[in-house]
Amino acid sequence: MAKRRVMLTFTPETSTEPIIYSIGQQFNIVTNICGADAPEGWGWIVVELEGEDKDIEDGIAWVISKGVRVDLIGDEAVGI
Image (cartoon, rainbow, N blue to C red):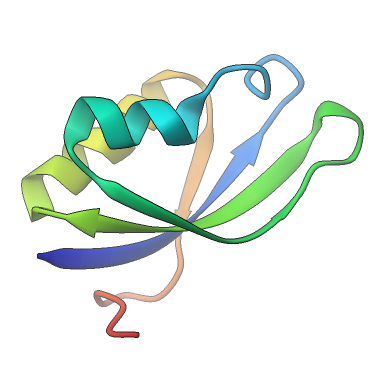
């Protein structure tokens, strides 16, 4: 199993969708929210994704397709 930590940045248009829930259900990824802030519709969430590499990559691509910005935190898998 791989782990990857990412920051998801939401706009008011994307903040109403259940992105974290959906990525876990659709791509068999375990999610762990590490931090978040969401003032007035805009916001960010730092989330650790755990699963198979392909599932994580597919999940990240899906999140991007939904209009959410995704930034990788660190270059390697998180070993915490």
